[in-house]
Image 1: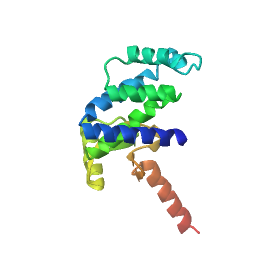
Image 2: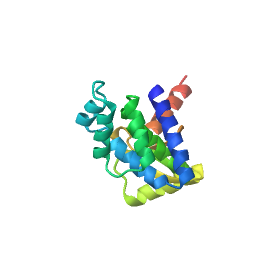
Image 3: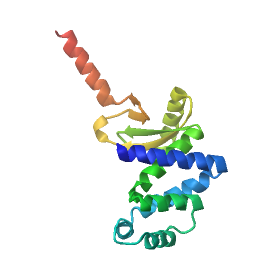
Length: 179
């Protein structure tokens, strides 16, 4: 949990700065690049090595990151200095969530028994959008155990319209009636 709350604070500060400077997309791209750098195991080992001087770490990071927003680069240097560069992935995700909220977009993790076609994806997105009153972008996943229907998770909301859930509800109802 502390990792997530730290990432949220860094993302919030980055978002506010980007919004103030009208650099939302630049920051988004820069934070994505920083997050991608955390996947490089060799680089991470060097950045987390306490024996390596900070100037060398900064130089490594500057060479590997390419062209990114200067203030985002400063954030990366700060994370390296604090030994928290691995937060880059979480910061990027949290920033994207803030950017989506700013744009009125809600993300929904939708689980279905079978892969969704474009029309089904649009229909679910439209229906969920009516429920929450925002534009909904669907991130689809497949899980055959739900048998049919779908399960949608949007933030702290859960909509379970799966056949598995309906069968469980029917089962409980039949057990209660038979008592």
